[in-house]
Image (cartoon, rainbow, N blue to C red; front, top):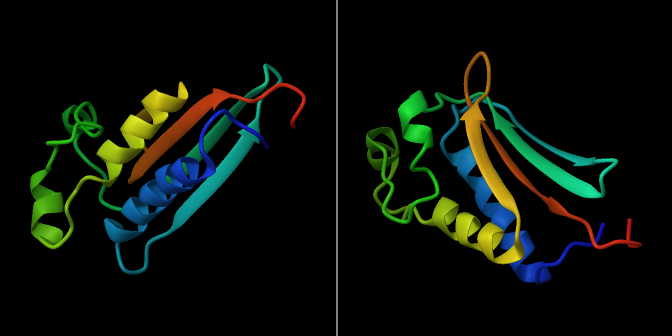
Length: 121
């Protein structure tokens, strides 16, 4: 599918989400990436994990560059913690939306969605 974004930026945004889902998951956890093409010529890319997730209130600040949840901080100080902020910035530049919600019964569900370039599906 074709979208309005530099390919390297789109790749970085998706790689950051998948890396985050794998890194913050349990050793035997699962990560799924789903792509949907919607009838209204929009795409939805969802990344699901079954890791520990975050408290509902912590989901609001996930795209902020300064966000560092206590659980994330204790996992590894060598990780800069900017992957989601970079993804948030790429999404904003491309005109996409980035949303975070709990994955029931546990984990995180992150969605990037935006318009397709017409005629390129």
